[in-house]
Image 1 (cartoon, rainbow, N blue to C red):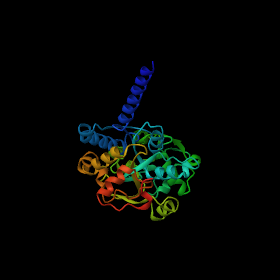
Image 2 (cartoon, one colour; image 1 turned 180 degrees about the vertical axis):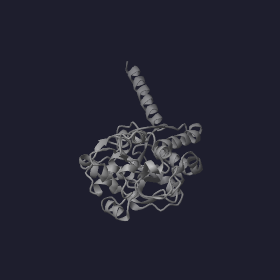
Image 3 (cartoon, rainbow, N blue to C red; image 1 turned 90 degrees about the horizontal axis):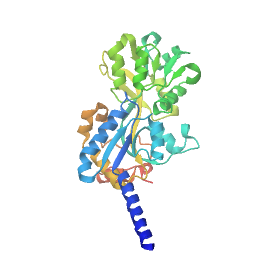
Image 4 (cartoon, one colour; image 1 turned 135 degrees about the horizontal axis):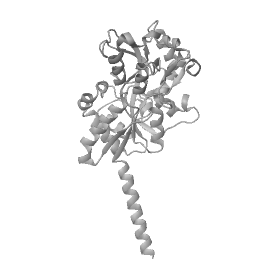
Length: 334
């Protein structure tokens, strides 16, 4: 009987060990809703990892859609995702226990790299345009405005920006909680007057909107320097971003908007070796990624650490040290 019990324990240990090992080999990448940039970039990263690492190391990755940064942080805590794309705003507030996460810090993730700028698109139907700047949203008072899926990074960043500019979104608008594609369709159907669509450039939902309505039907609003300063007084992560004319169908002038960094993170307890291999694979195959989505053309080793609001994962740190990068003290693994 004692021998049988010992054999049973051995099988259990082997089984648990295999499951733990498998968790580091079959990676889930949490992204965001369709129509933006997170999902296609997540698919590109997952495809790259699977192509380059499955045969040699048994590592593969699958991208899944989600409600965005807020849900992604929750999924990593629950170990429902291993890697995730996050807005810097969410990553900073979650790790520091500030803002949306006041008194409930989430520290179960670590940074791998900055990816690209998440560019703020506030498209609005032309009938509500007076100045062409974000203040035109006041013209929607009492009317439907899509702020993004409930609990998403889109909703969180939209609220942060508009609150900094004096908007009370819950009182001023009839809020709709739509994803990017739904928001654009609702605008084309004139069921909502404007939307909040932060994404890499070009954003497929905005491309669709311009292709269908053109500048005579809808535009993306500008931010003035004064408006940007007000936002930066509260959230210094946002900087000027210019969407060059011709980026979207029929776009005849530059759009002077703002952006914040998007970052790739991993669960804190994901193995150093796995994250090292993922980081190495990404930076040795940048052309592959940029061929799939132009937003990733901004990704480079030189700018990998720019704007990271949380410490590096030991696996990413190992790779960057090998490449000779100088790691700021605040990004050292811990």
